[in-house]
Amino acid sequence: QVQLVESGGGLVQAGGSLRLSCAASGRTFSRYAMGWFRQAPGKEREFVATISSSGIVTYYADSVKGRFTISRDNAKNTVYLQMNSLKPEDTAVYLCAFGTTTWASGGPYEYAYWGQGTQVTVSS
Image (spheres, helix red, strand yellow):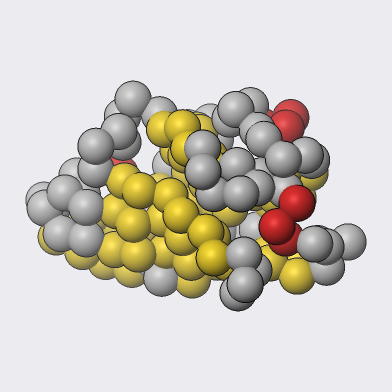
């Protein structure tokens, strides 16, 4: 069983930045891809970013490309999401996800475990 705990969410003005963290436990973190998703009220869960087990390969949704950066520290069993130039439409609950293998391209079915999420609210 894998436990995922997100942190770092909050309220920020448009144009501001936040850094989300997700600490994982329960499996060998460095062997698995990790991802970030988000879900706004009344909307379906949306892919945000994914990173390979080694941290070398990343992939982003078009809506966040150039503004968000996913990274990981395998020594700390933690994945991060640096969010810059935030927009009101980025408001959502952000969830981290634990992959089933070394790479996941962003489909929800490629992730076996999910955190409970952290709220990000961007005011205009």
